[in-house]
Length: 183
Image 1 (tube, rainbow, N blue to C red):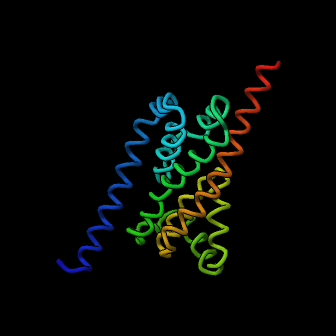
Image 2 (cartoon, rainbow, N blue to C red):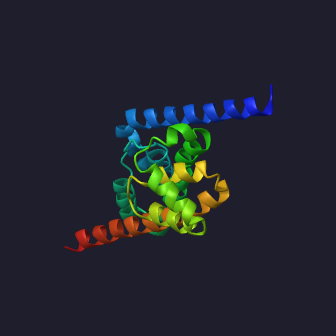
Image 3 (tube, rainbow, N blue to C red):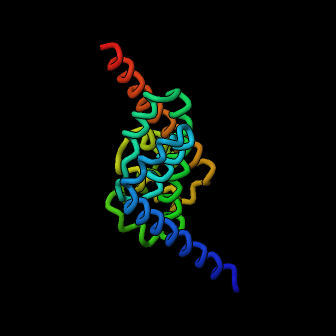
């Protein structure tokens, strides 16, 4: 088997894996709350699963809010942010494996054009989009994979943004819990 054919098969397998993960996470989204019983492991697994879907919403942020009230919010934020960053690799894999499919995503052309024009700013864009809860991050992950931004760079900047986002959410959950108890 030629190297080119092996790469094509690897890309197809990665794309099929992302589709399967997205469909399963959507089907079993109501069972995601069960991971909260696992404490800190749940704080890692919930965002990993919720962010592994591509353009299919799976709830996760409210569970991090609640876990921030129950556990140390800083640990919840770090574990949740790392889980979210690893989960976001699904969008990156879609871009890496299926450029033709990726080009059909609604916001993809705008994100890619910006990232190409401002390649040195792409890490800041990835961090910012990972920080803000929004549906555009999948497009940024797809664009990063298509542009072949190094996976370590994508993971690093996605982790930074995701950890900061989870920190705000977990701290809000913790503050709400303390307010509720005192009133």
